[in-house]
Length: 339
Image (cartoon, rainbow, N blue to C red; front, side, top):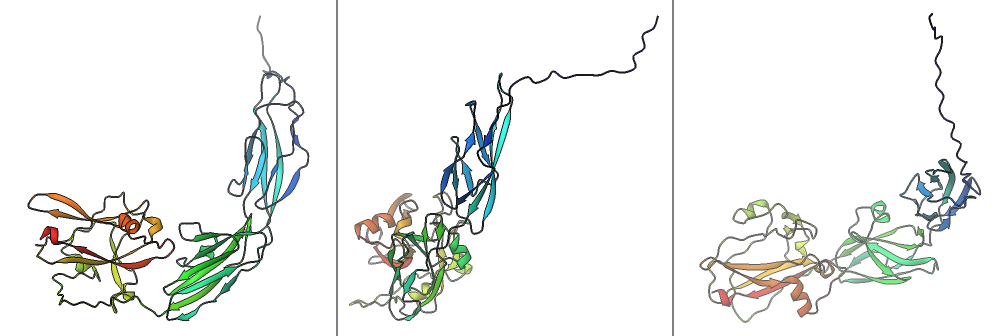
């Protein structure tokens, strides 16, 4: 006797769990940029947990409770929000989707700026005002490379004034970019060129004859031949011509460079009676809280290193404040103790 099999079929067990019946009350919803709403999810069986996801988190985020928050957009943008249930012993997995149309807000009014640029022989106080009730902040920058860069900037390259009126001090030639911001929107960018022809000169009077035993202007890499220079330091145009005519460049390091251990070391000197150390520093006091710097001296006969100067301590002791303005400041240190 023989058995002949002419076919073989396989059958999966039928999923008899219930439909979770998730759905949104509408298939789509519109929302103003910069505002929020609760996702209108219909969950008739009270299933938990429901996981919400967004197809574009950069402009639309959904928290675990289903609250939808939107960011600023310049054109109407549609994002898909999905609510998902993973399933359990009684209910099978299910999802529901909602199309969220993010609608851009009307831009804020263009702020008024006085003066709108120009050439001056003194520092200028620029007044910025707006009567747009939706504006809550004034933003400005003198270092942005373009209006587009400024428009999308943060506080690393721009400064913020809370309120609808502000004063910006301009004491060097620059292009000033200004705009206002409010909840979910901003004004068009206005820009103005300022030329300040009043340089800060190294103008000294003295009752003694002074001769420089050593002078270093850091105009090129050749000037660094006798110095020990870590990679974080570089020659840059730091507008030193404001102090010394014809002298454009300086040695520079950014506040974010390195890990706090980037010593720029001079050649060895024999300190003589009556010698002093004079130099100019270019800085903002607001950055010195987390990026201070010092000048130290090492006695090669004893190997002992002493801090001659601490910029952060100096600003506190001299009540020196330049939070929003980069500027040159002359520092003078007596070396008598090391002669």
